[in-house]
Length: 161
Image 1: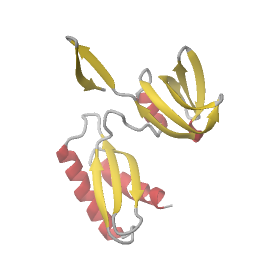
Image 2: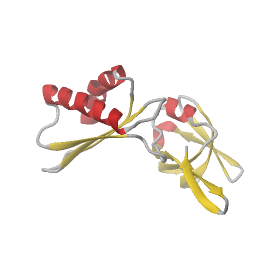
Image 3: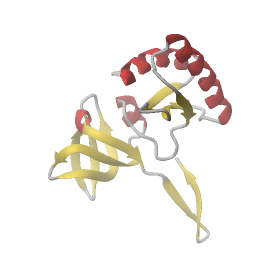
């Protein structure tokens, strides 16, 4: 699988630059292929960080030549509604609100929106309307943080983590 190969190739280089490779999205069909890398760091991600990773990843990908044909390389931050994939991501955001879509129904439903209470190597615990749900990590299709919106003086304020 090309995603796993790309992860193994890019993660050490991006790590040496001081960033975490959060996600790889590869849409490489046809002439307009896109390889999207999502990076993060404790200090946040700015344009200069994306440029630095883009140059390093581009050079490495050119040398290794894993991807046939033409494609565009995009590097970005995870954003406010970041995807959570690894156990450490879930552990970092315990106490936050998230939306989870399962590959198959759990407790008669596929979609959950609630507070991430805990996580371990196999499951996450999400409280939805006072009810606790244990969701197996292996069957999560996608999990994203829900951005917080502050009300300030009667108007919506800035979005924050």
